[in-house]
Image (tube, rainbow, N blue to C red; front, side):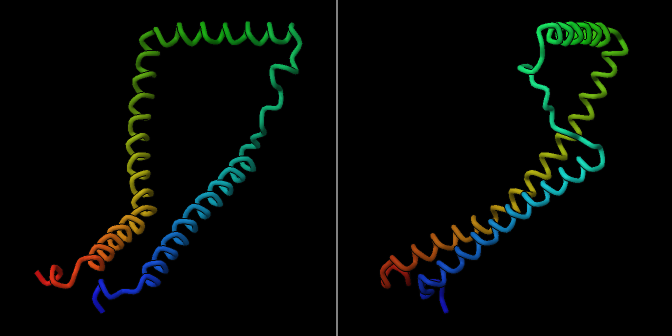
Length: 140
């Protein structure tokens, strides 16, 4: 059976299958992310920060701000030292490597997610174009 003879119902079912596929991938990704977060929370005992600034007294806020200022000053002095420059360069190189891997993984994920939809979109356009072209022009 030629593509132009395909019924509209077949194209609709193909689109339905692609939508189910994409939905399953998104659901699987969400479930996997939830499991990873639960695993990290279980392993490292992470708890959400419940101490917001509204719960702190003015003295506690002053201590917190003073501590943050002291830490920022120490970090600034360290980063301005030769060892700090070397550390910053090492971190920059590692982040660049992680970024390259993350870009590659993102492109693979997008290809897995979007390739069926893009392919079916092209197929649908070709199918529609061949159905609307008159018979005399189709043979030319």
